[in-house]
Image (tube, rainbow, N blue to C red; front, side, top):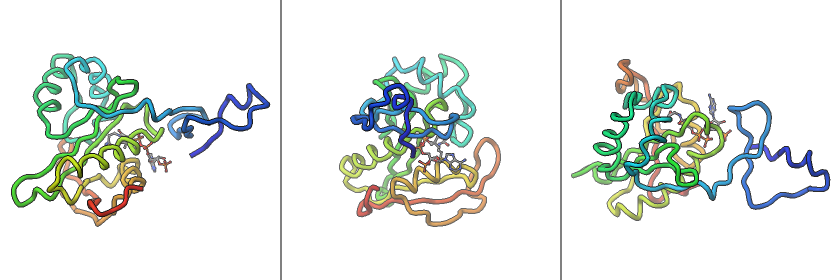
Length: 205
Ligand SMILES: CC(C)(COP(=O)(O)OP(=O)(O)OC[C@H]1O[C@@H](n2cnc3c(N)ncnc32)[C@H](O)[C@@H]1OP(=O)(O)O)[C@@H](O)C(=O)NCCC(=O)NCCS
């Protein structure tokens, strides 16, 4: 993470800035002042998120590693919010100033597997590399163990090529447990996946 900002060039007397977390985006060229994490929140999806959801859910770059397919119309986006996102046991919209820019989902299993839940997440490509999913995952992790008292283990499956997602999990405190060979299909192709876990007794980093 970098802490360099154009403002220092424009105000030569300024040696200290406070109140914002500034990160270096590797998705952009050079450095910039970016994310004020107090503008990031998690909340349930609403039907009125449809236009914002279509922007990132309709982007192949965002859905490439996800189990669901790129959304192609406003009607489909609305149906997805209504039938999948809203009834989901714990799917939250990652919001920037209350505007949907992504999601975090924690899906608890039932019966004898109720100790376990699966984590999944994405954020709009224009926000990649600014620490947003790391922050969103930390928020989610601090809430779900309280909201699901039977939950002991969070699990995430990540494709071998998806380095950004692996890094997110490592940054928040997940443990890489191993490689699951030919574990499941994604976009029609069977994939090797790393399995990561975080236990209720682990520390969020
Ligand atoms: C993966 C994804 C969720 C990361 O979200 P994000 O908000 O950009 O993540 P963060 O900025 O919090 O952290 C990303 C980290 O990965 C690193 N990273 C990104 N791409 C990388 C790559 N190709 N190789 C190595 N590291 C990479 C970043 O440098 C950063 O690490 P750092 O803070 O140590 O520099 C986001 O890219 C995304 O939505 N991808 C599409 C959906 C997806 O893949 N979801 C996960 C399915 S398992």
